Image (cartoon, rainbow, N blue to C red; front, side, top):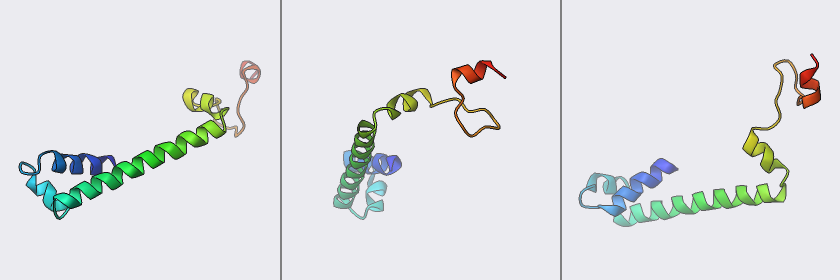
Length: 86
């Protein structure tokens, strides 16, 4: 999605210099439409994920810290008291 945004953005920014990029989108209006659709998709993606993180706020700390530490052979999280006892 980011690559589409960069290419369509360049095609919109300098359509004469990057006419080969404009031709990838058929014409200038096609580049504008692709750029608008891509930005809409990115904004919706961010809004959905932020709203889901707000709905379950206890997951925010896990997202920032990487979550609980897991041992190689265990599937359950290791608490700090278990980590000190082998």
